[in-house]
Length: 112
Figure 1 (cartoon, one colour):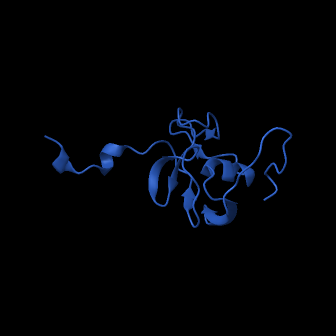
Figure 2: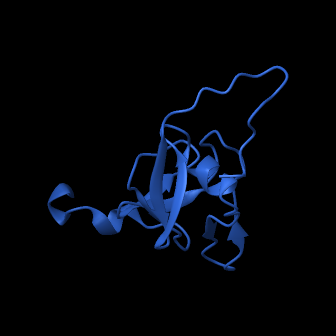
């Protein structure tokens, strides 16, 4: 867990308890409640997903939930903005290519 700032002259760091989670089957550690993207970044993971059209790498960009650079699959759920999603123990995080179409997951009974 060497990717974290320990001390800062102005800011105070309040962290949750240390937890383990999984990224692409690799066991990592982070702090409970911190954004998943921050835990991945601290662990040296810079590529969060690949663009659909050109397969270009996307990383931690806006950190406020306004772009789609951090869309990942978390515990089997696609399109999770990991810059906003708090880390919890045991989470399984995977890269996804592009954006999954939510219409593919909707039931046809919802259409009129």
